[in-house]
Length: 222
Ligand code: FDM
Ligand code: MG
Image (cartoon, rainbow, N blue to C red):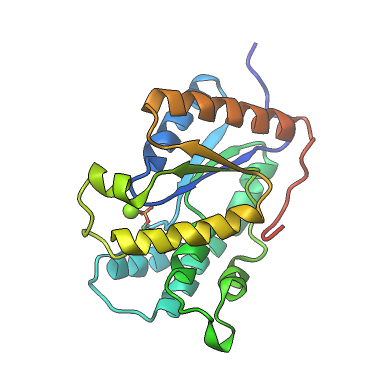
């Protein structure tokens, strides 16, 4: 019998440093859930199709220069612009597989701020523009050292792709992990299939809980 979506969909988020394999795992999970006839939709941020996303893409490709704090707000705007669509999809029983989100937003900006942050530009400032977005039911963090990441492919094509900067980003991700109870870390050095298997187990549990109404919708930053 074909499973019918009863309760809400689950919000499954993938986070990690550049080259950790997030996009591959998102695609694997999409195919896996689609084969199981789970209603599912994949999103990735930055969404480069949006008007804000085009500015972000130009910035990442170093075609235009923007102030780091202004870029931060653009990344958040790029998410807020689809907030209602995400909420509606989840409510309609559609599971969302998301490639990067506000955690990347906070970590990549906070990694650029000099400590001790003058004028209140700190982790909390970075979190503010994403307030009110739907919160993920699970954050799957694919952990890979910046050195192992760099060995996978050449860095340098886009801004941020530098080992020393990625180390700072990882430190910020670690701070976010400490305040996120639904954060799960997987070793990104494992075989793709082995990661995919762990991911499908984690996803199945989240999907079942959400479908059965065991997890109320939550919003950032709770
Ligand atoms: N990035 C991504 C940010 O700096 N802030 C954000 O809010 C998001 C979603 O953009 F280096 C950074 C992370 C990465 C770059 O992301 C492009 P993709 O996943 O490589 O396209
Ligand atoms: Mg990238």
